[in-house]
Amino acid sequence: MAKQAGSTTRNVRGSRTGRPIMALLDLLGRRWTLRILWELREEPLTSRALRMACDEASPTVLQARLDDLREAGFVELGEGGGYGLTPLGRDLCETFMPLHRFAERWRK
Image (cartoon, rainbow, N blue to C red; front, side, top):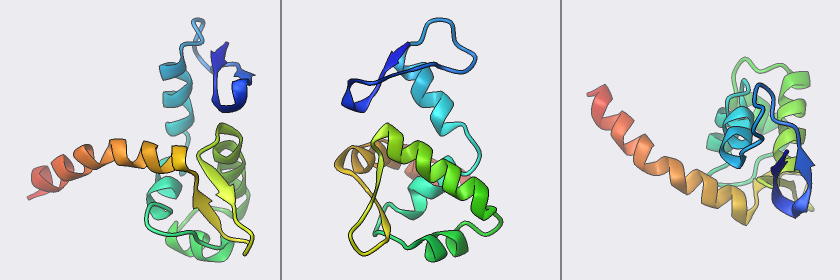
């Protein structure tokens, strides 16, 4: 079992160890999860705006991923109805920025 935000435990799919890194990689490896985090990195978005930003994501899958990200403590539903990153979610996205910069250099 892996510890997550809020001291809850969670089974890690495909892992017998339950190490936190395995739980995180499992979550981030789910379809559309990284895209959702990336689209929310600059500002909160409503469900409709997020669905538009995520081109082909079905509303059902998008909602399931948002639920996963909320449960993990990375995304929250704001008072205005939009989804935004929590401080932990912003911290996670910041860890991707060196990889983003590398990808931009690699692409050229």
